[in-house]
Length: 163
Image (spheres, rainbow, N blue to C red):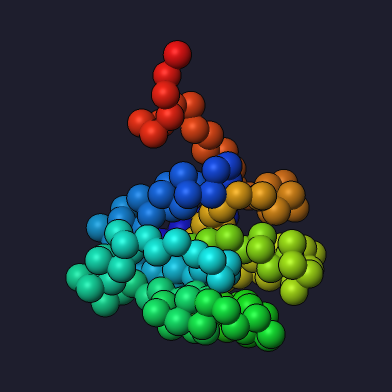
């Protein structure tokens, strides 16, 4: 499959997330196996992903919301750290071709996991594994190490009046 890429999509959180969802769709079309992980407990549901999950067995979704399979949204404690550890384990398992990590910076901002640890783990992933880190507040060390960094900014939106 070639060298796995590390991609960072940042900017307005929802818009960078939609960019990642588009990449999931492309990867599904290529027959890749994908794991999506959401690290922020206030995650908005990407209904697009949930509908794709119904059609593709090669897509798994995990997150802090109970309906995505890990923990209840109001559960703090060790659940985010447990989710991170499970993600690292699964990244190294060889089960998947692509990981999409939504709002990974939340763990760092909340002091649950260190930036150096996150960067080290992502750089030590298997050679063929692709990883997309999507969300606002990009992790600076990942921006420096990534194969591609895209900042998504809203220039015009149908909900905002124009001059």
